[in-house]
Image 1 (cartoon, rainbow, N blue to C red):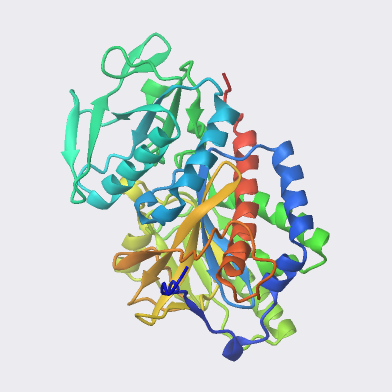
Image 2 (spheres, rainbow, N blue to C red):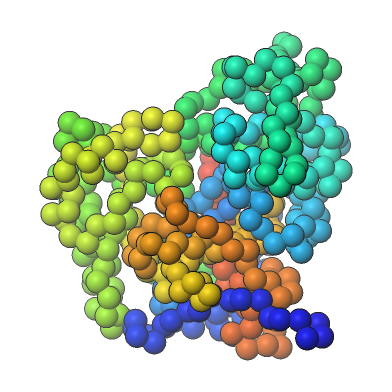
Length: 437
């Protein structure tokens, strides 16, 4: 290493906020048992092809708040770990289509979002480095021929229109992929052109946001976390967000407000009881968000029941619609988890996002927001990203180091993220799994 500067690591302030649970020490002391537990679970339920998990770390609690089965943001990962990522991709391919040579990547319809397109370029490079012939096929009807988009990084991506011949999807007339990889979360619905085809679609169409529900994911997570916590003899609350779901709500017509208010009241009381029990001197809060969808839309922080009974027109309009103008008719009321991590160069609030291919953690980044608080959603305009500051691979711990060693902090992230990955694996199994060839 010589005189190289150490990477910046976010500062975690725990002392003023109640007794911290030494999760990192616990995980390090039980590393062998933890890895054995995960191997057994992933043998029973294979991991999804890829996944990212948003975490919140309050010092006294470390838990997932969202799990994305169509992850973007690969351009924000640390390039030093691309070789690790390529190996994980090769394993993921072997589990779906061992003989795979041609893959078709189907992206979001964000042709004007250069950040997303940079992600697409990075993901494409990684898949090609894993040994795949890769083409990118778009669902956009206005793209009728191969279209190359130049990017600020100097790279480019070429989008091609999909064609269907019988029960197979092709592009360019003769490119016949073994499998289709979705990087489109299908918020607008399941594309008819992809239904009933022979090739495996990863993830399955039924896991798009047109059908998938966050509440179902966290039900699976809750069961797994309880099992994991019993195995380690800890309280599952330390790694599990409390939640309730409320369906059949219409923010514009003010229908379903009582269901929402009672759900908020229940979760707030549940959290307050636990805070009192543990001597945590913080004000409980919940996050109300759409039960499906991404991009930080349809989300609000609530600290008292009256907050959802007295929404003004602007607030109701904000909550009423999600990505691509989809109406929000179901919401998740989730325990709010403080983040006491800050990105020190800017003293800005931060939260980790962990990325996985198959069952392997391959990196991640900190989502940083200068203008948001420790009790607010950071996935909002104005956020930026800092690669997880690995001084060495953070997917396994430094057993000779202290709990403050960089890999050890990230090992704890990886443990909790893989619990969420297991929940996503059960969702995949529930949806019929991925057809293997």
